[in-house]
Image (tube, rainbow, N blue to C red; front, side):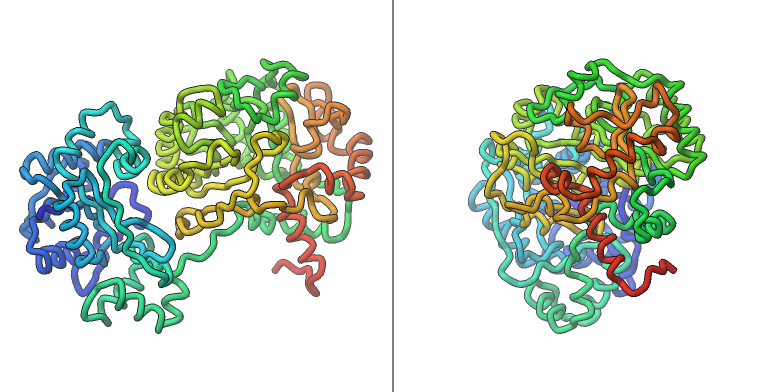
Length: 566
């Protein structure tokens, strides 16, 4: 039995995890010891040829195991090199941050794999599984065949997901090892994970799924942490960073003259995709599909915003912001003025490293689980390119999120996509149903099960997918107009991103004609605020409003005894 132990110090979420101590041993050494003692197997460490991974050479010598090093970016190449050198017919792949892997399950799966002559075998992750006990097994012939296929770097890195997405093509053994016990997390990502693992090892004579579950169930404090908590709604906490603005709103200053917290702006209406459900198509038709703001107007806007207290700018569509002719100058000037930057992009453009570092967050509008779905819904064949770019973005930007517009055409393989996104470094995926496109609306779809895949570094947000969810703000007074403002590619300024779709509703001004200060404090804004604040318009015309969470938060704060944010 040959085991490929995949390990690297590069890009791991918890930098000391490989050398944290379990029973006086490093995590890597502890796992190697368990494998060699209980399985009588051959262990081969695979790692990169970069300087950061030199230390594994010394570990291999000390633990008397082999090591194979190769290209950091090409996981498949490293694995093929290791098994080619070993000459084994089948091998088990194990990750170093899985120190509590269940060896009994591994032996059973290996036996089934050999008897069935499978290409690939793995433990199925279903609700209730203990995360971190599973493994996967490949035939060497199969992995070498994959190496000959024309796979991109993302596919060669996330081999398992590629295989599972193309399951009909290969001979696969999927084995469920779970029951109805809670889905405890047993792999090492954080220092808190280490504390849990250390306690389990110190107090259990055997390491298997049953005694781990029993122990955690009887230690409530430990299990409370270990069960992955629901991820926070993205962005809600940000409102608390602006107590003065909140205080103005709580004081019921409906016509708050203080500048918005952030401004969302379309640099250009130019787009390289053709999404069938795009809500901006009509707007681009009215304004011109090649409309874009001049750099001078953008700089004047940034000067004004920075001087009057706006914290950040979101670059978004309209069109694809990265296609703006002077995109780099825009990013550079915003940072020069001290404005935080976010970007909503389709992810088709491989942004330079220095640009990626300038963004506080990046959200990629993906909206498809397969290349076929992407081509059908967006009109362009570049699904794998976008996934490769997401992995690249995640290397330089801490928060790379995925926006996913759910239709009845893109839900067939969404679970596999979620697993793949988590693997390549995405911070979250936010799923919302399509609006303004009745024929594509995903009726009766429940995606709440996807929350099972969230952990401390990856969130799954499905609140907007509730069937028959209340549109708009449920009668609450909307504060969107006070915390943000929307600027279109032709310079038009709107109270919010929903109001710009109505051709009968004029913008409150245009930054090509007036400075933002004049527009923000002008009569047209006050007139439209009266319409919005009566609640009727928003209640009937804002399906799945993303500002609703802010409105609900403010309502709760209004009803508290204290309005003190100390």
